Amino acid sequence: MKLTTIEELLTSKRIKPVYLPSYIPELNLTELCFNLMRQQIEKNEPRTFEELKLAIDEVVDMLNQKDLTEYFRHCSTYDFSEKSDQLIERVIELTFGISLKGS
Image (cartoon, rainbow, N blue to C red; front, top):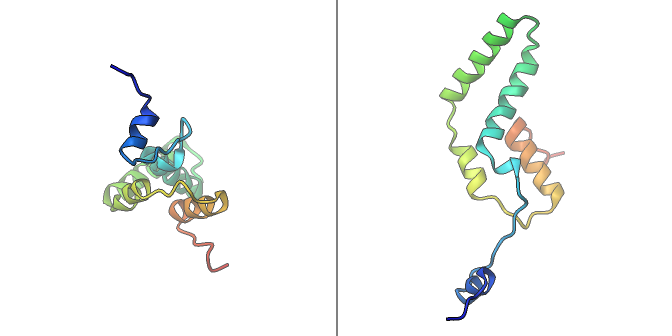
């Protein structure tokens, strides 16, 4: 029995392998949610532990009410052939809700 490489097996099935870096924060739902949390907390500028706890609770409530489908869709439809500037624009748009296309 001849052993074949994964790449040869994929090629024989007409599947193009996509090689990813070991870590892509743009595809990590936890990173996306924590980034939103960090931004909201920085916007509130809590000065005491109680204010920080309240800000965290507010963001958690907001995340619980938010439709996270957008985050899942972003990760599942990620286009690895994008140029880096396009990738940065998409991450900014998803993270901050700001579209750079009109500027």
